[in-house]
Image 1 (cartoon, rainbow over the protein chains, first blue to last red):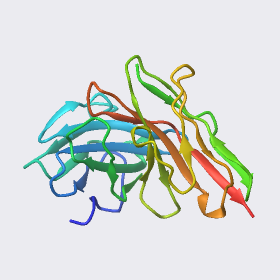
Image 2: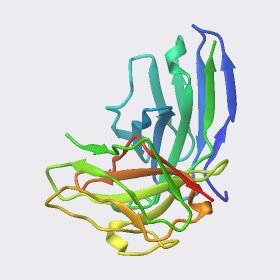
Image 3: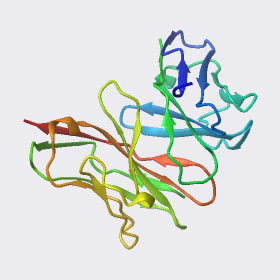
Length: 115
Length: 109
C-alpha cells in the first residue's frame, strides 16, 4: 500500500468491553511498532515487532493489553476489559527493519474513547 | 534507562524570530537522535535525524554528547512551522524508538 493503514480511525466503546485495533504496515517493512499518544504524555512506546516476533513488549501497560502479528504483515492490538484511562490515540508505525536508525512511517492512528 | 525529555510543552514565537526546541536525553550507549513533526490533521513524520546531518525546512539540530542534548533550531520561524514536535531516540541495542512528550510550537503573525 501507499502507507501505513490503521483501522478503525475512531472507536467508541463502553468500559469493560474488549477492542481490537488493526495496523497494516508498508509492504516489505519487517519492523512494526505500536505507540499510545495522549495529552501531556507524548508518545508512549507499547510494543515492537520484528517479523512475527515481539522482542520488546516492555511498554504494554498491563496484562489487559496484547498484540500479535501474523504473516509478517498485519498486526492487531487488543485491549481487554477497557478502562477510561485507555482512552487515547493509538499509533502504529513501520520501518524497513534493517538498522536501528531507520525512519519510522506512521499511520493516522485510532482514536479510542472509553465511556 | 533510556529517556527523552522535552521541557517545554508549549513554545510561542513571532514570525521571523529564532526558535529553539529543547531536547535532552539519557542513554548510556551511542544513541541515534531524531526530530519528528505532526502538522495539524497530518500524520506524524520525520523532520530530520542526526545521522543525516541534514537541514530540513531551515531546521537544524546538533548533537551535544557532553550536555546530552539535541536541540532543534531555526533562525527565522514561519507560520507554517506551527506544529507538534517530538524528539526521539533509538539505540544500537535494538530497534526500540522512544519519544519525548512533545513541544507544541505556535508561530504568531
